Image 1: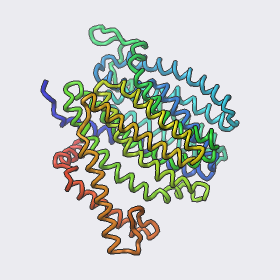
Image 2: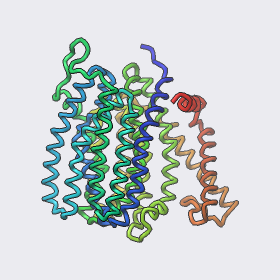
Image 3: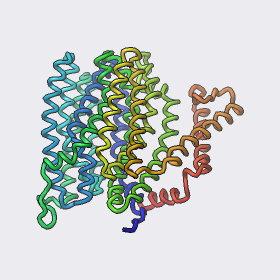
Image 4: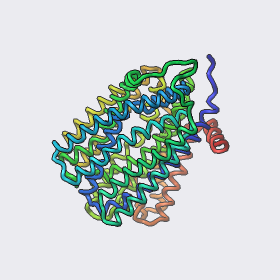
Length: 505
Protein backbone atom coordinates (compact mmCIF):
# COMPACT_ATOMS: atom_id res chain seq x y z
CA UNK A 1 0.00 0.00 0.00
CA UNK A 2 1.40 3.40 -0.91
CA UNK A 3 2.08 5.94 1.79
CA UNK A 4 -0.52 8.67 2.09
CA UNK A 5 0.88 12.22 2.26
CA UNK A 6 0.77 13.95 5.62
CA UNK A 7 -0.68 17.19 4.24
CA UNK A 8 -3.95 16.81 6.13
CA UNK A 9 -2.39 15.66 9.40
CA UNK A 10 -0.66 18.96 10.31
CA UNK A 11 -3.88 20.90 9.78
CA UNK A 12 -5.87 18.44 11.90
CA UNK A 13 -3.25 18.45 14.63
CA UNK A 14 -3.04 22.25 14.54
CA UNK A 15 -6.81 22.68 14.83
CA UNK A 16 -7.16 20.21 17.68
CA UNK A 17 -4.11 21.58 19.47
CA UNK A 18 -5.43 25.14 19.37
CA UNK A 19 -8.87 24.13 20.59
CA UNK A 20 -7.52 22.00 23.44
CA UNK A 21 -5.01 24.70 24.31
CA UNK A 22 -7.78 27.28 24.56
CA UNK A 23 -9.77 25.15 26.99
CA UNK A 24 -6.99 23.77 29.15
CA UNK A 25 -4.87 26.92 29.32
CA UNK A 26 -7.94 28.91 30.35
CA UNK A 27 -8.26 26.57 33.30
CA UNK A 28 -4.54 26.71 34.08
CA UNK A 29 -4.45 30.50 33.87
CA UNK A 30 -7.39 30.91 36.23
CA UNK A 31 -5.92 28.20 38.46
CA UNK A 32 -2.65 30.12 38.77
CA UNK A 33 -4.46 33.16 40.14
CA UNK A 34 -6.52 31.02 42.49
CA UNK A 35 -3.36 29.35 43.84
CA UNK A 36 -1.88 32.80 44.37
CA UNK A 37 -4.98 33.66 46.41
CA UNK A 38 -4.77 30.37 48.33
CA UNK A 39 -1.07 30.31 49.19
CA UNK A 40 -0.91 33.06 51.84
CA UNK A 41 -4.29 32.05 53.27
CA UNK A 42 -3.57 28.32 53.62
CA UNK A 43 0.14 28.60 54.46
CA UNK A 44 2.61 25.74 54.02
CA UNK A 45 0.53 23.28 56.06
CA UNK A 46 -2.73 23.95 54.23
CA UNK A 47 -1.00 23.83 50.85
CA UNK A 48 0.49 20.48 51.83
CA UNK A 49 -2.94 19.04 52.67
CA UNK A 50 -4.40 20.49 49.46
CA UNK A 51 -1.59 19.15 47.29
CA UNK A 52 -1.69 15.69 48.86
CA UNK A 53 -5.50 15.47 48.44
CA UNK A 54 -5.23 16.50 44.78
CA UNK A 55 -2.42 14.02 44.09
CA UNK A 56 -4.11 11.11 45.89
CA UNK A 57 -7.22 11.79 43.82
CA UNK A 58 -5.08 11.92 40.65
CA UNK A 59 -3.52 8.53 41.43
CA UNK A 60 -6.92 6.93 42.04
CA UNK A 61 -8.27 8.62 38.90
CA UNK A 62 -5.66 6.99 36.72
CA UNK A 63 -6.35 3.60 38.31
CA UNK A 64 -10.09 4.13 37.68
CA UNK A 65 -9.51 5.05 34.03
CA UNK A 66 -7.98 1.58 33.54
CA UNK A 67 -5.75 2.68 30.67
CA UNK A 68 -8.74 3.05 28.35
CA UNK A 69 -8.49 6.76 27.47
CA UNK A 70 -6.20 6.75 24.44
CA UNK A 71 -7.25 3.22 23.53
CA UNK A 72 -10.92 4.24 23.45
CA UNK A 73 -9.99 7.06 21.07
CA UNK A 74 -8.04 4.61 18.91
CA UNK A 75 -10.82 2.00 18.76
CA UNK A 76 -13.53 4.55 17.92
CA UNK A 77 -11.25 6.08 15.28
CA UNK A 78 -10.96 2.64 13.71
CA UNK A 79 -14.70 1.81 13.96
CA UNK A 80 -16.99 4.79 14.58
CA UNK A 81 -20.04 2.59 14.27
CA UNK A 82 -19.03 1.06 17.60
CA UNK A 83 -19.04 4.38 19.48
CA UNK A 84 -21.91 3.53 21.87
CA UNK A 85 -20.85 0.02 22.98
CA UNK A 86 -17.21 1.08 23.36
CA UNK A 87 -18.24 4.14 25.39
CA UNK A 88 -20.77 2.30 27.58
CA UNK A 89 -18.52 -0.61 28.44
CA UNK A 90 -15.69 1.79 29.26
CA UNK A 91 -17.99 3.58 31.70
CA UNK A 92 -19.06 0.34 33.39
CA UNK A 93 -15.44 -0.73 33.86
CA UNK A 94 -14.51 2.66 35.30
CA UNK A 95 -17.46 2.94 37.70
CA UNK A 96 -16.78 -0.53 39.08
CA UNK A 97 -13.11 0.26 39.71
CA UNK A 98 -13.97 3.71 41.12
CA UNK A 99 -16.14 2.10 43.79
CA UNK A 100 -13.27 -0.21 44.79
CA UNK A 101 -10.84 2.74 44.85
CA UNK A 102 -13.09 4.77 47.11
CA UNK A 103 -13.40 1.88 49.57
CA UNK A 104 -9.59 1.71 49.63
CA UNK A 105 -9.43 5.47 50.23
CA UNK A 106 -11.72 5.17 53.27
CA UNK A 107 -9.38 2.53 54.67
CA UNK A 108 -6.24 4.53 53.83
CA UNK A 109 -7.25 7.74 55.61
CA UNK A 110 -8.09 5.73 58.73
CA UNK A 111 -4.87 3.73 58.98
CA UNK A 112 -2.73 6.76 58.07
CA UNK A 113 -4.03 8.79 61.04
CA UNK A 114 -5.12 11.78 58.95
CA UNK A 115 -6.18 14.87 60.83
CA UNK A 116 -9.83 15.88 60.56
CA UNK A 117 -9.19 18.57 57.93
CA UNK A 118 -6.95 16.34 55.81
CA UNK A 119 -9.47 13.49 56.10
CA UNK A 120 -12.41 15.59 54.91
CA UNK A 121 -10.43 17.17 52.06
CA UNK A 122 -9.11 13.81 50.83
CA UNK A 123 -12.48 12.03 50.94
CA UNK A 124 -14.29 14.83 49.14
CA UNK A 125 -11.63 14.98 46.41
CA UNK A 126 -11.92 11.20 46.16
CA UNK A 127 -15.50 11.58 44.89
CA UNK A 128 -14.04 13.24 41.78
CA UNK A 129 -12.90 9.85 40.46
CA UNK A 130 -16.49 8.92 39.58
CA UNK A 131 -17.11 12.23 37.82
CA UNK A 132 -13.80 12.43 35.98
CA UNK A 133 -13.93 8.81 34.89
CA UNK A 134 -17.15 9.65 33.04
CA UNK A 135 -15.89 13.00 31.71
CA UNK A 136 -12.69 11.48 30.38
CA UNK A 137 -14.66 8.82 28.49
CA UNK A 138 -16.54 11.69 26.85
CA UNK A 139 -13.19 13.33 26.09
CA UNK A 140 -12.00 10.18 24.29
CA UNK A 141 -15.15 10.03 22.15
CA UNK A 142 -14.88 13.69 21.18
CA UNK A 143 -11.20 13.31 20.31
CA UNK A 144 -11.89 10.26 18.13
CA UNK A 145 -14.54 12.22 16.22
CA UNK A 146 -12.27 15.32 16.18
CA UNK A 147 -14.91 17.40 17.99
CA UNK A 148 -12.60 18.71 20.67
CA UNK A 149 -14.24 22.14 20.57
CA UNK A 150 -16.95 20.74 22.88
CA UNK A 151 -14.34 19.32 25.21
CA UNK A 152 -12.73 22.76 25.30
CA UNK A 153 -16.07 24.45 26.03
CA UNK A 154 -16.63 22.17 29.02
CA UNK A 155 -13.13 22.91 30.30
CA UNK A 156 -13.58 26.67 30.01
CA UNK A 157 -16.94 26.70 31.81
CA UNK A 158 -15.54 24.39 34.49
CA UNK A 159 -12.47 26.59 34.99
CA UNK A 160 -14.60 29.71 35.40
CA UNK A 161 -16.86 27.98 37.95
CA UNK A 162 -13.85 26.70 39.93
CA UNK A 163 -12.19 30.11 39.96
CA UNK A 164 -15.32 32.06 40.92
CA UNK A 165 -16.50 29.66 43.62
CA UNK A 166 -12.99 29.16 45.01
CA UNK A 167 -12.35 32.91 45.19
CA UNK A 168 -15.71 33.67 46.79
CA UNK A 169 -15.37 30.94 49.41
CA UNK A 170 -11.79 31.92 50.24
CA UNK A 171 -12.99 35.50 50.74
CA UNK A 172 -15.81 34.20 52.93
CA UNK A 173 -13.30 32.46 55.19
CA UNK A 174 -14.01 28.83 54.22
CA UNK A 175 -10.30 28.23 53.56
CA UNK A 176 -9.17 24.84 52.28
CA UNK A 177 -12.62 23.24 52.25
CA UNK A 178 -14.02 26.07 50.15
CA UNK A 179 -11.41 25.34 47.46
CA UNK A 180 -11.99 21.59 47.68
CA UNK A 181 -15.76 21.92 47.23
CA UNK A 182 -15.27 24.41 44.37
CA UNK A 183 -13.03 21.88 42.63
CA UNK A 184 -15.60 19.07 42.92
CA UNK A 185 -18.51 21.23 41.75
CA UNK A 186 -16.54 22.49 38.75
CA UNK A 187 -15.96 18.89 37.61
CA UNK A 188 -19.70 18.23 37.70
CA UNK A 189 -20.28 21.35 35.62
CA UNK A 190 -17.75 20.19 32.99
CA UNK A 191 -19.57 16.89 32.59
CA UNK A 192 -22.99 18.60 32.45
CA UNK A 193 -21.80 20.87 29.62
CA UNK A 194 -19.82 18.38 27.57
CA UNK A 195 -21.89 15.16 27.68
CA UNK A 196 -25.03 16.50 25.91
CA UNK A 197 -22.87 18.03 23.18
CA UNK A 198 -21.05 14.72 22.73
CA UNK A 199 -24.30 12.79 22.25
CA UNK A 200 -25.57 15.43 19.85
CA UNK A 201 -22.51 15.81 17.64
CA UNK A 202 -20.86 12.37 17.55
CA UNK A 203 -21.91 8.80 16.96
CA UNK A 204 -23.63 6.88 15.46
CA UNK A 205 -25.12 5.88 18.82
CA UNK A 206 -26.26 2.33 18.14
CA UNK A 207 -25.78 -0.89 20.08
CA UNK A 208 -24.41 -2.90 17.18
CA UNK A 209 -21.92 -2.02 14.49
CA UNK A 210 -22.50 -2.15 10.74
CA UNK A 211 -24.09 -5.36 9.48
CA UNK A 212 -25.09 -6.38 13.00
CA UNK A 213 -21.55 -6.87 14.29
CA UNK A 214 -21.69 -7.73 18.01
CA UNK A 215 -20.49 -5.06 20.37
CA UNK A 216 -17.34 -5.64 22.44
CA UNK A 217 -18.18 -6.52 26.05
CA UNK A 218 -16.68 -5.42 29.37
CA UNK A 219 -14.32 -8.39 29.46
CA UNK A 220 -12.89 -7.40 26.08
CA UNK A 221 -12.47 -3.79 27.24
CA UNK A 222 -10.66 -4.88 30.40
CA UNK A 223 -8.38 -7.16 28.43
CA UNK A 224 -7.67 -4.33 25.99
CA UNK A 225 -6.91 -1.81 28.71
CA UNK A 226 -5.04 -4.01 31.20
CA UNK A 227 -1.49 -3.41 29.89
CA UNK A 228 -2.00 0.35 29.83
CA UNK A 229 -3.79 0.17 33.18
CA UNK A 230 -0.65 -1.28 34.76
CA UNK A 231 1.58 1.18 32.91
CA UNK A 232 -0.45 4.28 33.71
CA UNK A 233 -0.88 3.22 37.32
CA UNK A 234 2.86 2.78 37.74
CA UNK A 235 3.38 6.04 35.83
CA UNK A 236 1.05 8.16 37.95
CA UNK A 237 2.52 6.75 41.15
CA UNK A 238 6.04 7.72 40.15
CA UNK A 239 4.93 11.23 39.20
CA UNK A 240 2.54 11.93 42.12
CA UNK A 241 3.60 9.78 45.06
CA UNK A 242 6.37 12.19 46.08
CA UNK A 243 3.87 14.67 47.59
CA UNK A 244 2.09 11.89 49.47
CA UNK A 245 5.39 10.48 50.78
CA UNK A 246 6.57 13.94 51.84
CA UNK A 247 3.34 14.51 53.74
CA UNK A 248 3.70 11.19 55.54
CA UNK A 249 7.47 11.34 56.18
CA UNK A 250 8.19 15.07 56.62
CA UNK A 251 4.83 16.68 57.47
CA UNK A 252 2.30 18.99 55.83
CA UNK A 253 4.61 22.03 55.75
CA UNK A 254 7.34 20.25 53.78
CA UNK A 255 4.70 18.92 51.38
CA UNK A 256 3.32 22.46 50.97
CA UNK A 257 6.74 23.90 50.06
CA UNK A 258 7.24 21.11 47.56
CA UNK A 259 3.73 21.46 46.13
CA UNK A 260 4.21 25.14 45.25
CA UNK A 261 7.53 24.46 43.52
CA UNK A 262 6.27 21.34 41.76
CA UNK A 263 3.02 22.97 40.62
CA UNK A 264 4.82 24.86 37.84
CA UNK A 265 5.83 21.56 36.22
CA UNK A 266 2.30 20.18 36.62
CA UNK A 267 0.88 23.28 34.94
CA UNK A 268 3.43 23.49 32.12
CA UNK A 269 3.27 19.78 31.26
CA UNK A 270 -0.22 20.43 29.97
CA UNK A 271 1.31 21.95 26.82
CA UNK A 272 2.94 18.75 25.50
CA UNK A 273 -0.05 16.76 26.80
CA UNK A 274 -2.39 18.88 24.69
CA UNK A 275 -0.19 18.40 21.65
CA UNK A 276 0.02 14.64 22.21
CA UNK A 277 -3.76 14.38 22.59
CA UNK A 278 -4.38 16.37 19.42
CA UNK A 279 -1.68 14.47 17.53
CA UNK A 280 -2.87 10.95 18.28
CA UNK A 281 -5.96 10.62 16.04
CA UNK A 282 -3.88 11.60 12.99
CA UNK A 283 -1.03 9.30 14.03
CA UNK A 284 -3.46 6.41 14.59
CA UNK A 285 -4.94 6.87 11.10
CA UNK A 286 -1.56 6.86 9.37
CA UNK A 287 -0.32 3.98 11.51
CA UNK A 288 -3.15 1.87 10.08
CA UNK A 289 -1.59 2.27 6.62
CA UNK A 290 2.20 2.24 6.95
CA UNK A 291 4.63 2.80 9.79
CA UNK A 292 6.67 5.28 7.73
CA UNK A 293 4.04 8.02 7.86
CA UNK A 294 3.55 7.62 11.61
CA UNK A 295 7.31 7.74 12.19
CA UNK A 296 7.66 10.86 10.04
CA UNK A 297 4.85 12.56 11.92
CA UNK A 298 6.45 11.47 15.22
CA UNK A 299 9.85 12.88 14.23
CA UNK A 300 8.42 16.21 13.21
CA UNK A 301 6.35 16.40 16.39
CA UNK A 302 9.34 15.49 18.58
CA UNK A 303 11.52 18.09 16.88
CA UNK A 304 8.86 20.75 17.36
CA UNK A 305 8.23 19.87 21.01
CA UNK A 306 11.89 19.84 22.07
CA UNK A 307 12.62 22.99 20.08
CA UNK A 308 9.98 24.84 22.08
CA UNK A 309 10.30 23.19 25.48
CA UNK A 310 14.06 23.27 25.99
CA UNK A 311 14.62 27.06 25.95
CA UNK A 312 11.34 27.53 27.80
CA UNK A 313 12.62 25.24 30.54
CA UNK A 314 15.87 27.23 30.78
CA UNK A 315 13.87 30.46 31.04
CA UNK A 316 11.73 29.07 33.87
CA UNK A 317 14.87 27.92 35.68
CA UNK A 318 16.28 31.46 35.62
CA UNK A 319 13.01 33.04 36.72
CA UNK A 320 12.08 30.52 39.45
CA UNK A 321 12.68 33.01 42.27
CA UNK A 322 10.36 35.76 40.98
CA UNK A 323 7.71 33.15 40.07
CA UNK A 324 7.55 31.79 43.63
CA UNK A 325 7.65 35.27 45.17
CA UNK A 326 4.68 36.23 42.99
CA UNK A 327 2.65 33.50 44.70
CA UNK A 328 3.95 34.27 48.20
CA UNK A 329 6.86 36.55 49.08
CA UNK A 330 7.21 35.23 52.62
CA UNK A 331 10.30 33.31 53.72
CA UNK A 332 8.14 30.24 54.40
CA UNK A 333 8.04 29.36 50.69
CA UNK A 334 11.59 30.47 49.75
CA UNK A 335 12.80 26.90 49.17
CA UNK A 336 9.99 26.37 46.66
CA UNK A 337 12.11 28.29 44.14
CA UNK A 338 14.93 25.73 44.36
CA UNK A 339 12.39 22.90 44.03
CA UNK A 340 11.06 24.58 40.89
CA UNK A 341 14.57 24.97 39.44
CA UNK A 342 15.08 21.22 39.79
CA UNK A 343 11.74 19.73 38.79
CA UNK A 344 11.14 21.97 35.76
CA UNK A 345 13.78 19.98 33.87
CA UNK A 346 11.22 17.21 33.73
CA UNK A 347 9.34 19.30 31.14
CA UNK A 348 11.43 18.42 28.04
CA UNK A 349 11.74 14.82 29.24
CA UNK A 350 7.97 14.45 29.58
CA UNK A 351 7.42 16.23 26.26
CA UNK A 352 9.55 13.63 24.49
CA UNK A 353 7.94 10.78 26.44
CA UNK A 354 4.47 11.88 25.34
CA UNK A 355 5.45 11.65 21.65
CA UNK A 356 7.16 8.28 22.26
CA UNK A 357 4.06 7.09 24.13
CA UNK A 358 1.77 7.81 21.17
CA UNK A 359 4.17 6.06 18.79
CA UNK A 360 4.22 2.92 20.93
CA UNK A 361 0.41 2.86 21.07
CA UNK A 362 0.26 3.32 17.30
CA UNK A 363 2.64 0.37 16.97
CA UNK A 364 0.32 -1.72 19.22
CA UNK A 365 3.11 -2.08 21.79
CA UNK A 366 1.12 -1.06 24.87
CA UNK A 367 2.63 -3.88 26.92
CA UNK A 368 5.95 -2.06 26.86
CA UNK A 369 4.42 0.52 29.19
CA UNK A 370 4.14 -2.05 31.96
CA UNK A 371 7.88 -2.42 32.38
CA UNK A 372 8.54 1.28 31.66
CA UNK A 373 6.06 2.37 34.32
CA UNK A 374 7.01 -0.30 36.85
CA UNK A 375 10.75 0.32 36.66
CA UNK A 376 10.35 4.12 36.74
CA UNK A 377 8.02 3.82 39.74
CA UNK A 378 10.42 1.58 41.64
CA UNK A 379 13.28 4.01 41.00
CA UNK A 380 11.18 6.97 42.17
CA UNK A 381 9.74 5.33 45.29
CA UNK A 382 13.13 3.93 46.30
CA UNK A 383 14.92 7.25 45.85
CA UNK A 384 12.16 9.11 47.71
CA UNK A 385 12.35 6.64 50.60
CA UNK A 386 16.12 7.12 50.80
CA UNK A 387 16.36 10.86 50.18
CA UNK A 388 13.28 12.43 51.80
CA UNK A 389 14.47 11.66 55.37
CA UNK A 390 17.87 13.19 54.55
CA UNK A 391 17.21 15.91 51.97
CA UNK A 392 13.46 16.56 52.30
CA UNK A 393 11.76 18.22 49.36
CA UNK A 394 15.07 18.67 47.49
CA UNK A 395 15.53 14.90 47.54
CA UNK A 396 11.98 14.40 46.25
CA UNK A 397 12.59 16.87 43.41
CA UNK A 398 15.81 15.14 42.36
CA UNK A 399 14.15 11.72 42.51
CA UNK A 400 11.46 13.03 40.15
CA UNK A 401 13.99 14.06 37.49
CA UNK A 402 15.95 10.81 37.73
CA UNK A 403 12.82 8.68 37.37
CA UNK A 404 11.65 10.74 34.37
CA UNK A 405 15.08 10.22 32.75
CA UNK A 406 14.76 6.47 33.29
CA UNK A 407 11.33 6.54 31.63
CA UNK A 408 12.77 8.50 28.68
CA UNK A 409 15.55 5.96 28.09
CA UNK A 410 13.17 3.01 28.35
CA UNK A 411 10.76 4.56 25.84
CA UNK A 412 13.65 4.92 23.40
CA UNK A 413 14.64 1.28 23.93
CA UNK A 414 11.18 -0.11 23.25
CA UNK A 415 10.62 2.10 20.21
CA UNK A 416 13.86 0.76 18.72
CA UNK A 417 12.66 -2.80 19.29
CA UNK A 418 9.33 -2.02 17.61
CA UNK A 419 11.11 -0.31 14.70
CA UNK A 420 8.98 2.76 15.36
CA UNK A 421 11.72 4.97 16.74
CA UNK A 422 11.92 8.30 14.88
CA UNK A 423 15.32 9.77 13.96
CA UNK A 424 16.40 11.53 17.16
CA UNK A 425 19.81 13.02 16.37
CA UNK A 426 18.40 16.21 14.90
CA UNK A 427 15.14 16.24 16.89
CA UNK A 428 16.92 16.02 20.26
CA UNK A 429 20.51 17.07 19.60
CA UNK A 430 19.65 20.09 17.45
CA UNK A 431 17.64 21.99 20.09
CA UNK A 432 20.16 21.11 22.83
CA UNK A 433 23.11 22.40 20.80
CA UNK A 434 21.08 25.40 19.61
CA UNK A 435 20.19 26.32 23.20
CA UNK A 436 23.82 26.08 24.34
CA UNK A 437 25.12 28.13 21.41
CA UNK A 438 22.47 30.83 21.69
CA UNK A 439 22.78 31.28 25.44
CA UNK A 440 26.59 31.24 25.24
CA UNK A 441 26.52 33.92 22.54
CA UNK A 442 24.02 35.99 24.57
CA UNK A 443 26.17 35.86 27.72
CA UNK A 444 29.29 36.78 25.73
CA UNK A 445 27.65 39.72 23.96
CA UNK A 446 26.07 41.32 27.04
CA UNK A 447 29.06 40.64 29.27
CA UNK A 448 31.07 42.76 26.87
CA UNK A 449 28.43 45.43 26.20
CA UNK A 450 26.95 45.77 29.72
CA UNK A 451 29.13 44.01 32.32
CA UNK A 452 27.21 45.80 35.09
CA UNK A 453 24.06 43.86 34.31
CA UNK A 454 25.57 40.70 35.76
CA UNK A 455 24.57 38.35 32.94
CA UNK A 456 26.11 34.90 33.49
CA UNK A 457 25.66 31.27 32.47
CA UNK A 458 23.45 30.76 35.52
CA UNK A 459 21.24 33.85 35.54
CA UNK A 460 19.29 36.51 33.72
CA UNK A 461 19.64 40.16 34.87
CA UNK A 462 16.55 39.95 37.09
CA UNK A 463 17.71 42.64 39.50
CA UNK A 464 18.64 45.19 36.84
CA UNK A 465 15.10 46.13 35.76
CA UNK A 466 12.77 45.30 32.91
CA UNK A 467 14.96 46.88 30.22
CA UNK A 468 18.00 44.62 30.70
CA UNK A 469 15.79 41.60 31.30
CA UNK A 470 13.86 42.08 28.06
CA UNK A 471 16.99 42.95 26.06
CA UNK A 472 18.86 39.82 27.14
CA UNK A 473 15.80 37.58 26.65
CA UNK A 474 15.16 38.98 23.16
CA UNK A 475 18.81 38.52 22.21
CA UNK A 476 18.77 34.89 23.36
CA UNK A 477 15.59 34.26 21.33
CA UNK A 478 17.16 35.85 18.24
CA UNK A 479 20.34 33.80 18.56
CA UNK A 480 18.29 30.65 19.19
CA UNK A 481 16.27 31.15 16.02
CA UNK A 482 19.48 31.65 14.06
CA UNK A 483 21.06 28.57 15.63
CA UNK A 484 18.08 26.41 14.66
CA UNK A 485 18.31 27.60 11.06
CA UNK A 486 22.09 27.13 10.99
CA UNK A 487 21.88 23.59 12.38
CA UNK A 488 19.03 22.65 10.05
CA UNK A 489 16.57 21.98 12.89
CA UNK A 490 14.02 24.22 11.21
CA UNK A 491 13.56 23.34 7.56
CA UNK A 492 11.77 25.00 4.69
CA UNK A 493 9.13 22.26 4.74
CA UNK A 494 8.46 22.93 8.43
CA UNK A 495 7.95 26.64 7.75
CA UNK A 496 5.48 25.78 5.00
CA UNK A 497 3.60 23.43 7.33
CA UNK A 498 3.30 26.19 9.94
CA UNK A 499 2.02 28.59 7.30
CA UNK A 500 -0.59 26.04 6.20
CA UNK A 501 -1.64 25.52 9.83
CA UNK A 502 -2.14 29.25 10.34
CA UNK A 503 -3.90 29.79 7.03
CA UNK A 504 -6.27 26.81 7.14
CA UNK A 505 -6.94 26.27 10.85
